[in-house]
Each structure stands twice: as C-alpha cells, then as structure tokens.
Image (cartoon, rainbow, N blue to C red; front, top):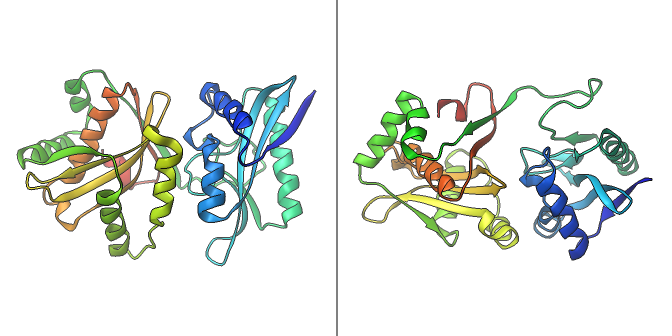
Length: 285
C-alpha cells in the first residue's frame, strides 16, 4: 500500500534513504536532495514539507516543498524556492499522482495563492504553466579539443582571447572572492544579493558537490567567479559574478571553458546551463 510521509528535519536515517532514492531516480535533480530542507529552514526560515511516497518500506517518489510567505514573494507553496528544477521525482505514476494530490491538500490548508511545481516538463495539461524559460544542456567529451570545437566559433575566439590575456583559473576553497564579485555584480544590476550565510550553508551541506571556480589576472586580481553544483555526471553552474573589467578581458568566456575542463576532470558528461529566458543567457555559449 502506498503511503505519503513527511521527512522531519534532522532525521539522518530517513534523509539518507531519501538521497539514495534521489541519486537513483532518473527524473530527480540536485534540487531534490534532502539537504535543501535544512537550508530552506535555517537560512530563509521557510516552513518545509518534504514529502515522500513509500510502499513496503521502499521510497517510490519525493516532492520537496517550502512555504514562501513574504511581501516580496507573496504567499505560495513552492517546489522548490531558489531552484530551477523541482516538482515530483518518482518511479511510478501512482507515486507521482499521490504526492501531487498531497501537495494540493497542503496548499489548500495553508491558504496559499498558488502551488508552484518546477518540473522539467509539464505533468498535467490542465495546470497553467510558464513557457518563457527553456532548459539548455550540453554533452561533454573526454578530450579538451573536442569540447573546444563544440563551442560556437564566436565564443571559441573569446576563450582564446582570455587565454592570450594570460588569465588563470583556480578552485577556491572559500567564498571570499566569489561573494565579492557576486555581490558587486548584483549591486550593479540593481538586484538584492542573497546573503553570505546562504552560500556558506550550501558549502557546508553539499561539500565538494558545491564548488567555486574563479578566473583572475596573472597579478591575482579576481575577475569572474562561478559557484557550481555537481550531481551524478552533471555540472550546473548556478551563481556567478564578475568585475567590470571581466568582459573586455574575456574572463567570463574563459570561466565557462575552464569549468568545462574542470567538470571533465571530475568525470562529468553533461554541462547543464539551467533555465534561461528565451533569447538570453546561455544560448550564446
């Protein structure tokens, strides 16, 4: 018999079972990992509802949710805030349907304005959906030369310009250089930066699966930085920042090239650009 349960914060054994399912489920993503529950609760004070469907002691599906209630973001039950992916990850249609039904019950009980599930594809034709965003993923090859040739000609020239400018990349153990560039970048665009404690929580929770790569001049001036998530054989560059001088020196193009090289070293075979509005962002690369 299928039953719906809620993962309680701090349940280490249950969290481990949850993550084992996520790692094996083809439709799951990095954002389905149990560690997001602690981040949502402790960093942002969102009430969480991490639901899982279980049959005969085996997890059949998961649905991580958080209740967002603020003047800025409104009143919604979201799977999952700050995530490009989310929604149900299940191995049977019955588990998926049961989890979505439970989510609707919780949404009605909370009196939210809407329930938002960030599935990678539409699951119910009767539900409204936004189609202004597209997902872009790129296959990675084992050899650097093959990956370089797969980059569009214009961006390939920019990568070579960055190399010619003597720019260097490094994996940062801490967040100092990344956060300085990220916060400055957000300020220049008039957008509030997420707090440093959030990024510290990401590194603490996900360890080596949350990694910072920074590009700098040969004199050590940080120009461009990216925080990426690693999941199975995929890499997802997720938060980034750059200095004003980065564009002229081709630091951003070199940054993504160096991230591709780093991901291949780690065994990744998919470069996931995430979701972008149509006609913007990742299409250039």
